[in-house]
Length: 199
Image 1 (tube, rainbow, N blue to C red):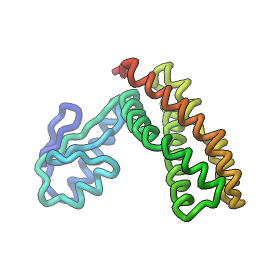
Image 2 (image 1 turned 180 degrees about the horizontal axis):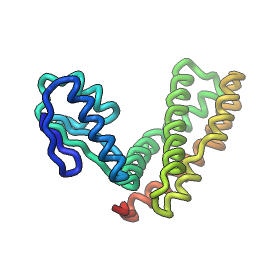
Image 3 (image 1 turned 90 degrees about the vertical axis):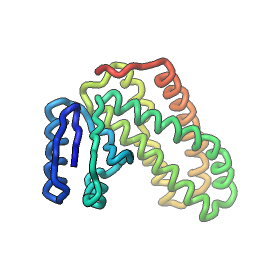
């Protein structure tokens, strides 16, 4: 296998020992450069998530791996693009969901609520990333506050535990929807004002 990590070329045999060596080399490069793993491109296929598992699963036929490393700021900007796409799809669905919880929620309503909670948790993970990453620019401070959803998640969890559909509708209408709309506006400003990653 031919592996490229930050302009360095490496050659490995196609075996399980090599997979471990590739992971170690990626981790060493990350440690030495302060960069983060974005994804890997394996024979032209972009692999996000768990690249190690993908490499193991396709070990016999892999010829070329490009490891894509980015600065923490660029990583965050990529995350924000994903967040913006999520909000564009989620916001229009919230008003009908509110109506469903104010009426009689169906199993589909509860499923949508579960998906909404996952989306909120994703933003909460983004807040943790911003809080824990020291080398981010100043503009991320206001963003960190905007993606802080811990109190809302606690309220939502309590309402779900009590199976209080009206309370859930209120939380979505008065807490989540306005926050999502404000966050969508903030992301639009950040991403269209051409915030440049500080490489």
